[in-house]
Image 1 (cartoon, rainbow, N blue to C red):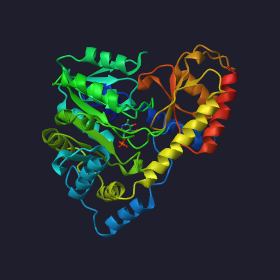
Image 2 (spheres, helix red, strand yellow):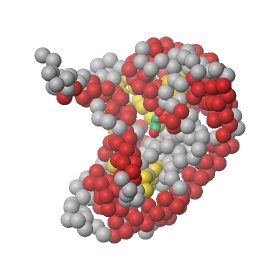
Image 3 (cartoon, protein in one colour):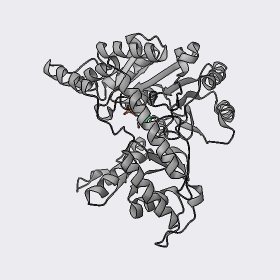
Image 4 (spheres, rainbow, N blue to C red):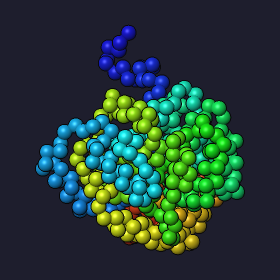
Length: 409
Ligand code: PLP
């Protein structure tokens, strides 16, 4: 019987099984907590955020204003305007040597929605998705929500060769997708052309496996590295690859919510069908802005990557003198992934034992005023993710605080 109080959401069985089987985004939760503590007057250096701290370039904002003034304020084609799809095809050709037609392009409210649509459009209950760890917090949850089974591959010593062996071992007749992400959030690993070539050879032996390649950090690569994407390295895989990208990270446009993908038409059509019954088209004004981003000058993108590299170097130097924490050396993206295994089991000055990476995040937040995300939701317990999408002054201050907090353990 319906509740007399009207509070049905708390009754067992009211919330769907699908809603109950997923967890909220850990990185969103950590950012929200940091914002709440700051709002309450605490001094918090927030290094949780997965978004560039730069402003959206002026020419992109101006394109949005022009679009509004020209009356581009209505619903558009569900999975993107033709103008934007054409700009995306030009981008894929220019940056990735990939030829897509506008019919092979999908646009949604962020790469997040693109991935969500793709999984909803393809997964039947029990279908498997192979995901190397560590990975972005949302992959496993999205697969689970869509009714699939995430088959994760724990990181092991031995580098890429070991990863390839593990991928091959994980593939079963139920495998629908392999999901890869380079530059990787959170590890900063960037796959080389040779590595992708070896992965392609493996995939050619398993023609039923599709590949979702999340290239959202494409432009943020360091030390002169070049970015490659799988369908570029092996054109024979293009017919079963969804190449995912977006304007969020490259052009500091996280709030505009535009992500896109290139892929085979039947998949793109199924994704559009799902979007047509959920959010409809992404914001018309943001789409016009995205055209300006993709077609406009690209030097700023590279200039900003250089700034990220400079911050990475600054942090690596700082961490040489922070006891108990071993940073990775990211090759791309804007995160340090900190190995904190040595700090596990230590006692805080308040008498608490640090039993997990979550305890450590709490300790740094409460006692040092530095906010980060714990590694477990990325599939890497004992780690913390530090975003260096923050000013050098804030990064230096965070390190000072972390050094002090670590020396007290
Ligand atoms: N993919 C990865 C690996 C990410 O880290 C993020 C955002 O943090 C996204 C996708 C989502 O990007 P968008 O803003 O386009 O939804």
